[in-house]
Length: 237
View: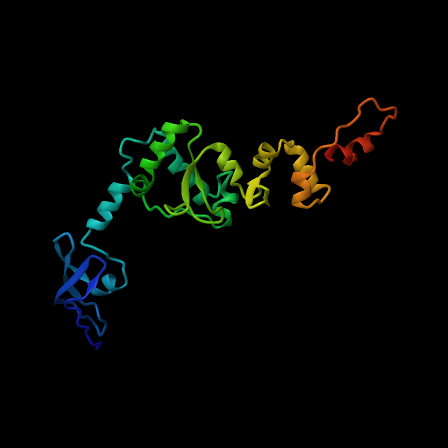
């Protein structure tokens, strides 16, 4: 016959073992103990279920989770709640058109419930909303390879979020690292000009950002072929 383990005083999740009740049968340990739950209730439960984590409480834990998961605090029609729902969809729903860029590459969310999300993010959402409006209040991950979490999320305008995409080109120059759009604004160069210098001419960052665009004389005598027009590098210098 299997030896009974003394569980008295041991705690598993929300349950603390009080006393052995019985239940050994046919040489197998099917012991039952009286457990006291954190909520104050006492209940007789099979010890193996408690030790393996199959039973975590007297039943109050599952009840709490059910209430939380089915309660949206009358916010189900708000933009804030829709942001939460969209976040879950892109991370967990393989049928979502955005899944391959999120859940498909390992990105997940770390808030277990909408209530947790609201506690962490609602106040900052309201502040951003007041400054930038609904359309320009989007949730943005600071590290694009990281999960949605309190530490890795912020509210951003659509332009800021666009600048934070994985495929956004950033250039470091004179102690500043900025996107092409930001450098275009600072230097007065055209966005397309900067991009072409990087992609087609393979210039150094200094050349890209410090070389002025040469004025072109459009009163030219020659006519160019379609191929020449598409490959004319003088447009970028």
